Length: 164
Length: 210
Image (cartoon, rainbow over all chains, first blue to last red; front, top):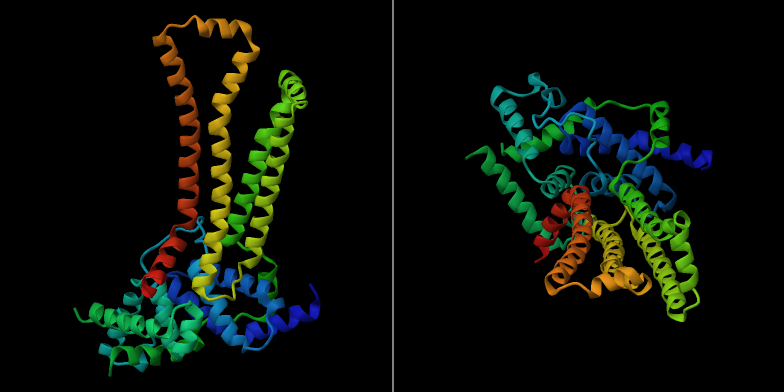
C-alpha cells in the first residue's frame, strides 16, 4: 500500500490513540491484554482505512471500529494468562485529586464496570464519551428508544452494584 | 456528587495517563497480522472446502481399483450428471462464501457486523451438512454397489439368515451414524468455541429489540 496513505493514517491514529486506549481500558483487565487489543484495533482500523471517505470525522469512525473489534472481532489471545482480577496499576487513581471516599467510589465503580457484559460496557463507554443517542443507536445497530432504555438500565445496574 | 458524574470526571481526566505511542511505534503495528474471528473463520472455511474436495479426490489417485471402477462408471450418464452437479454445488458454495466475506465490514453497526459474520458461518454450516448428507447416502450406496460387483460377497449375503442380515444392516447404520456423529460433534465444538462470545453479544443486542 502506498506510503502517503500509510503516513496519513499513522499520523491521525497517533493523534487519536486515546480512543483506542479507552476502549481497551474497559474491555481488558491487564496490561498485556490491553496491548493485545490495542494492536488488533489498530490492524482493523488500518484494513478499513482505504474505505474511510472522510465524510465522518476520523475519531467518530474510530469509535465504531474500536468497539466492533472489542465486542465482535477480537479473540482473546490464548497464550496469555487470563486473569479475572483487574490490574490495579491500570486504574491507578491519582489520590491527591480526590478525597478518600471519592477514591474508594471510583475503584468500586471501575470494578463494577468490569462485571458488566460486553454490550453494557459499550453503552457505558459511549456515555462516558458523551455520545448522543443517535450515534449510540447507529454504532450498536439498535433503535434510539432502545438505546435510551438500555442506557438507563445499565446506569441503574451500576448504581445497584455500588449501593446494594 | 452522583457516582456516574464522578466517574465521567475521572474518565476525562485520566486521558493523560495512557501510554502515548509514537509514529515509529505505530508503523510496525499496522504490519502485523490480524488474529480476528473473521480471519479464523476464513481459514476454517478454506480448510473445510479443501478437506471435502480431497476426501472426494484422493481415493482416485491412491487406489487403482477405485480408479478403474470410476473409469467404468464414467461412461454412465447418471454418473457424469452427478459429478458435474457436484462441482457446480461446490463452486456455488465458494461463490456464496466469497460474497458473504466481502459483506463483512468493520465499519457497520455492531449488530449488522455480527449478522454478516453469522451468515458467513451459516454458509459453511450448510456446506458441511451437504457433505454429511452425501456421506450418509454414499456409505450404504457403496455397500450396495459392492454387492453388485462382488459375486462372492453377494452369495454370502443372500445365504444369510434374518438374524445375520439384521446385524449387517445394524452395522452399516452404525458406521454411517458414527461417521456423521463424530463430524457433527467436531463442528459443534469448533464453532461453539469460536463463536461463543459473538453469539452471546448478538443475543444481547437482539434481546433489546424484541
